[in-house]
Image (tube, rainbow, N blue to C red; front, side, top):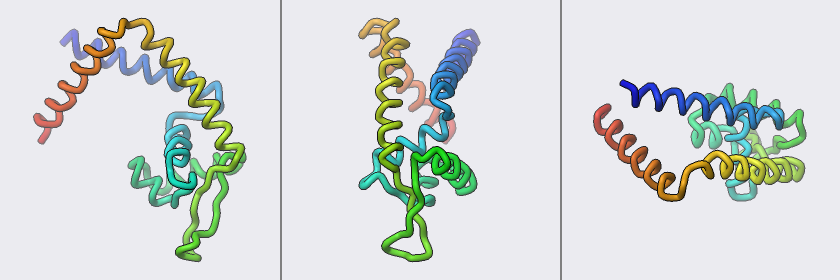
Length: 141
């Protein structure tokens, strides 16, 4: 019971801290996920349905996020070469610069958080979490 409470509190605090960090950059976690998905994609360009499928977000949510990112100048909608009726979402050069800068800042931020634990503690934390996740997958199946 105590372990469950600790897991929930730690997870909530981590999520709150990361949300606060992203908020400084004017975005939330969902927007960050779309940006990183586009950044990782070939040509930094995907269709809304590809993004939706990769992130398990609704198409409505992808449209809302794309509207926000387009207004910020980080993405642009383009006609698909394969299907004239379809659109692609592409990172702009401003969007590329933003996600690179944000990723660097986040990396330093996460090093600060995880740096509190020794290397051995970090490895043990990873092993225990992977073991629990695998067990939870088995239990729920």
